[in-house]
Structure formats: C-alpha cells, structure tokens
Image 1: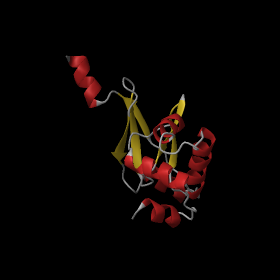
Image 2: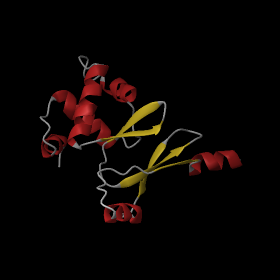
Image 3: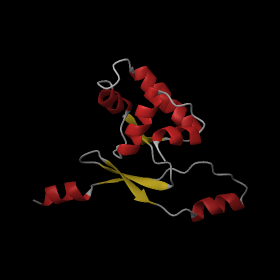
Image 4: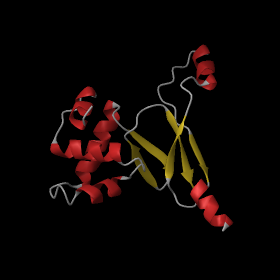
Length: 138
C-alpha cells in the first residue's frame, strides 16, 4: 500500500505535506521528533512550517495513523508503526528501538475482568543498547 492509500485508509485527506510527513515516518523508524521531521522535509517543501508538521502529526494521532511517544520527557517523538509493540530507549545514545510485544497482555485481561476497557497500552523500557554496551566494554 502506498502512502496515499495508507492515509485514505485512516480517513485522512492526502495533501503534499501529509504524504511527505507520513512517508518520512514510515521510512524512518528512529521515532523522529517534530524538529527532525521539519528539518528533513523543509528542503523538499520550502512552504512547510513547523506548525504544519505539528498539526499534521496531531491529525495522524487523532485518526490512529501514528503514535506519539513520550518516553523521553524532553521531547515527544512520533511512530508511524501503529502495530502493538513496546519501545526501548538507550540512556547513552538516546536511540529508541521497537520491541515485539504479545497481543494479549495478562494485566489488560485482568483489568477487563474488572470492567475496565483499555484503549491504549504504552510499554517503555530504558537502559543501554547493545551498541553502546559494546563501546563501554572497549
């Protein structure tokens, strides 16, 4: 599915800016922040503003086409992968990694048994990634 069809599947009207921002999110799995997305795309789209990037990401989140990560209290990052998965942030380099996660969470099932309806689950880990761990050993 191309980016145009992807946006339509989330009931988002495609525009040049929206297509470029979603394409960037889907191709760059490093969970970029607004500034990173803006800096990467402003050369291609000179009329692009940070406000447009912010509003577009907000629209994507509202429609379920992207997720906002607040794993880092200094910056909000964005993820174009809306599948169920966890995140790991390296405290040394700051990189955020996607981690597989089971679809059925026993804690969520316990909540459901008590009448709670879980609409979102966020699972974050923080530590040292393998690359930084290797560097520290050398």
